[in-house]
Image (cartoon, rainbow, N blue to C red; front, top):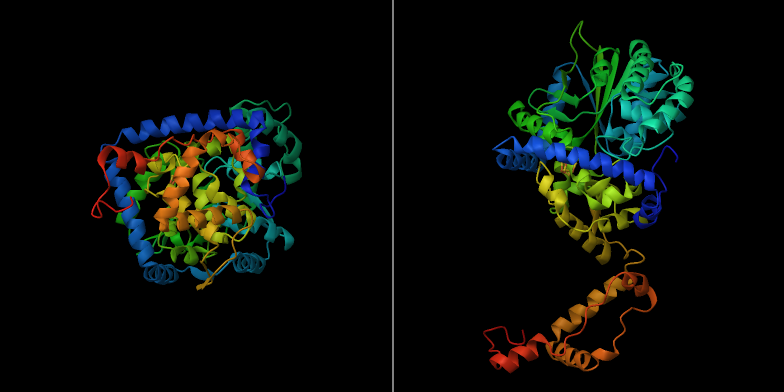
Length: 496
Ligand code: SF4
């Protein structure tokens, strides 16, 4: 596996390969079931979970409605506190900005706090091209980086690896990146964690520049917030001289009172903890305490286009807890890589096509990566109706647009592979508009029902190989109604 998601195949092809990997499926099933059970217990402790969830959704919706106002308030507050704010319209702009900022320090190495925004824009690869090496310091991200791999889960990026695989990666790769793995390293969790701690400690103590994301940004004071479980984030946020934070614009919340809601929702939904072990907050710079220079890069990269879609915009409420991944039957079988972005599972299926657009075959396939069972909506702490957005995006894929790109609406050609579905929908629309023809067709289908094939020919063959086509009844509902109740009146809906 390469270090980038670019050029990955459409979901069905990637998922087909993943479902044949029995070790991957065993790792995923064990991990997701363990996390989901713990989450259910942590959530059940709170009597007011439903109210908290509604409050979280309401705060996010209000913020998104007035996003321009809160971002300007945030910019003013960060600047007043000694930070420097930069705006990046897309991944290229953000990568160029961060590269320039690191170069200006004269350094060739940075340490990183786990950050999905920087994965989204491919920052590590962009820095590498400029001769700057980025060291991931989150344990799971370290495993992924040393393995030349890609994250496959939001919270547990190396969920697809088991302990013996991790031991082999440490033994093989650590020496190339710094302190080698200890002699005779076993696959016990304690030994693996100690090896990572020793390896990373060197980096923390020598790094002059750190790159982070943020879970939240508080507009009223210009404060950024990172929550984590290991403490590595706090080392990165406090020890280096320069801190560069790359954060999606949807991460802003208006006030500390609003933040309180999310600091309850997030830990129980993600790690099943009552509160996060480490919650780091910082506001600009402070003399003699922490980094002397602080840059905030505010990232759009498709977010304002997503905001323009009144159904799809709810995806921007996401607080990246990963609860929806852990209950998703499709994710459990396909794994995270099949989603072709750092956002796997149900949230990836609705976020990636909106951030990147549905023109590509991967992006157009993602809204179909779901059985629409609704388990993701049930567990989402900010009540994102993921099934609703999936259906909405399917409609957009089949209709071929319109979508919003760079603030203007464009109409897309229908995605290839969906032409047949589109033609079928047109035929259905015509039939329902012509009740006489529909009735004649139903009668003909009933009379010839014994001649109907049980399997579809041509492109429908694969679909019907594992499904029984429904049997056509001997009598249509309309005919049954007429026979038993008489002619329907106009008031009762005419032909209905
Ligand atoms: S969509 Fe909801 S459940 Fe899924 S990661 Fe985002 S906040 Fe969590």
